[in-house]
Length: 295
Image 1 (cartoon, rainbow, N blue to C red):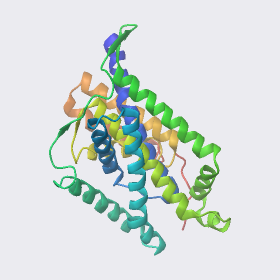
Image 2: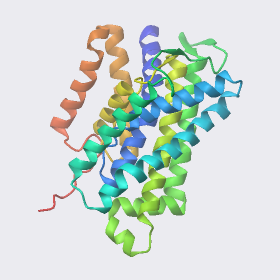
Image 3: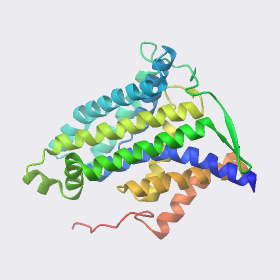
Image 4: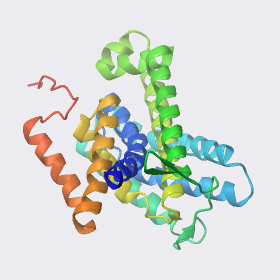
C-alpha cells in the first residue's frame, strides 16, 4: 500500500507539471481555436533561461520569474509575427496549424545552434536542498513539495486573473464570440496577445519545474512534455481550464503507474490509449462541452 501511495505522489508531481503546460494550450484554443504546437518549445526556453539565472547565482524564485517574463514576451512575439497576420487575412485554420509546427521547428533548431543554447545536454542545478520526509509511510521529497506548491499558486493566480479582473472578463468574452466582443469595444488583438503571454509564462514555469524534477535540459526537451500536455488538455476537454487540470493529473497517474507496475515501454502507449478510449465515449473530453456545428 505504501508503495502504491508513493507512486500516486509521483504521478501528482508529473501531472502538476503537465497541468501548467496544458492550461496554456487550452487557453489559446479557447480564445482563437488554435493548437499552438510551438508551446512545447516555450517550455524549453523557460528551462534554459532559468538555468542561466541559477548558474549566475540568482535565487531560484527570481530565476523562474525572469524565465516567465522572457517567455511571456516570446509568446507575444510569436503571436504577433506568426499568427496574427494569418488571422487578419482570414487564412484557413490549417495554415495557422502548419505555421505553428514551423515555429516549433524553428525554435528547436535555432536553440540547438552554438550561438544560442547549443546542442548538448546540460545538468540543471538544484533549486532547493534535496530532502525527504516520511509521512504515514509515504516518502515525499522537497522537489515534489516545490512542484505542487508552485503549480497550485500559479493556478490560483490564473483563476483570479480570469474571473476577477477586467482583462479576464474580456478574455471570456472573446472566447465566446470574437466578433461580438469587437463590437462591444474590446481590443481583441490585445486580449489574444495577453492570452499568449499568460500561457507562455506558465509554460516557462513548467519548464523550470520539469528541469528541477528531471535535471537535464537540451533544445529538444519540450517535445514530449508538450505533446503529453496537449493530450491531457484534449482528454479533459480542450478549451476548459478545469478540464486541462483534470486531464493532466490523470495523464501523470497513468504514466507513472504503468511504468511502476507494468513496464516503462508501455507508459506512453497507455497514456495515449486512455485518450482514445475517453474520446470514443466523450468526444468533447471529460469536462468539455460539445458545441453546435456551423453549416
